[in-house]
Image (tube, rainbow, N blue to C red; front, side, top):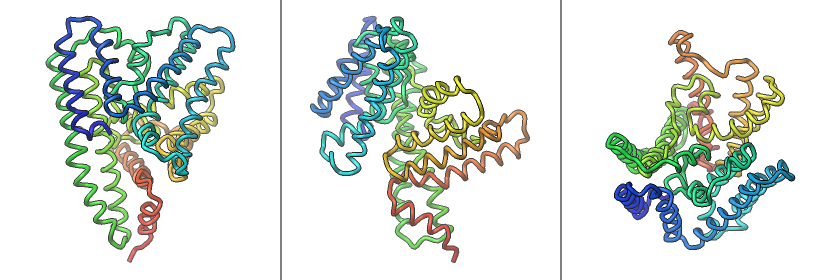
Length: 383
């Protein structure tokens, strides 16, 4: 992860200083950013830089063709998305099977490919629906794919929003600068201090013989660790991204005050939930609008989101678990709760139920079968 590397932090800080010093040059953000993105990846790994240069050029070719062509348009759209998705999932599966275990493949998987595939898909959607009006220069497309602040950890940027920002001159006022620096410091504190301390306690308790109260503690504690870890990375990415002149979407929107699982996934890793909802749920539910279709799509989306985190049975079951709950909410028409229209007691009770359901499953993020089974077995050890 770039944000755990002091050289990467210094490089991004230096880039921000250069942007501020050249703010009178109207094209500084576009030109200097592509140079920075490529040089950053090149210094990090020459092979990684070469891979992403080729990956970006190939997908830009598909993007331009989709913008311009009227022949086999839908087929091209589907093929472009399928090629990216199948390539990633096949690669991850081979990695899990230890077939492609080498430094280059490790870097490609862990340093952004899964995030970047989602961005490529968003660009293909844009090209498909806007045609010639959606075409953008290669420099802006490459900056979108290779944007360093969100390269490894999100938030997931929307193609339309990024292109709109690319057309604007670089402007960072004192208020934005102060707020962004505070976000970066907060993110570092969460990740370096809080997560490190909490992980040590989690590991210490996990080594003991687990009983019900200890397993409950570990479930709640790990939920907090994951929150501080994920939100810490997001805070740093948002801070650095805004200082480089781009609008960064919020990724965590008070998820603990979500009264339903549907609303939880609009507030927890919000950009990921938005992506799947915009590109799958809205796309297919418009043609056959019904509660049963919505329920089925909810299960599909959550399974895909689970597999997005990791191509294992644990993540499949994690996605299925959340998908079934959201499907039930759709069928019972209880996907949302308006805080202003219900009593505080009822609202917070629903929040408690939702958080209990999330807490029970979040240990799967540990990606360790033995850890997951030990903690779940410990729940049944009352004595």
